[in-house]
Length: 130
Image 1 (cartoon, rainbow, N blue to C red):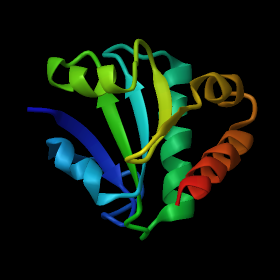
Image 2 (image 1 turned 60 degrees about the vertical axis):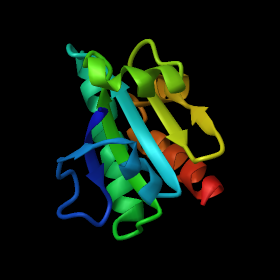
Image 3 (image 1 turned 180 degrees about the vertical axis):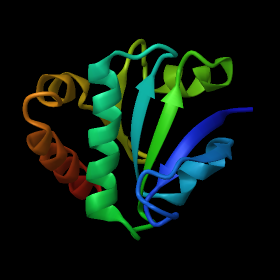
Image 4 (image 1 turned 90 degrees about the vertical axis):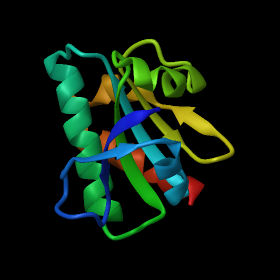
């Protein structure tokens, strides 16, 4: 059984973390913004999660077609999802049922020095898939 930590837009306060089990939660939205990480995270990785959650919450709050999902790839039950998106380290993936885009390289390049530019990139890529 797959377990995820999920913070979905329109579900409580921005940044609220909810527990969800199973891939069925992923079918509720047209676009899912995945933040994959391991057990231990550096400051940059933690900041990436925060900036990504802010971008989704600020721009898609109340939109059931967009959700943010945090996935700890160090947990065995999340391995299938990590394998599906070919994740081997901290990553940021924007996915639909038909395709996905890994924006990890751009995200890590921007997150510390240009977080607003990263937010704009996330919003642009989500909107392109709605």
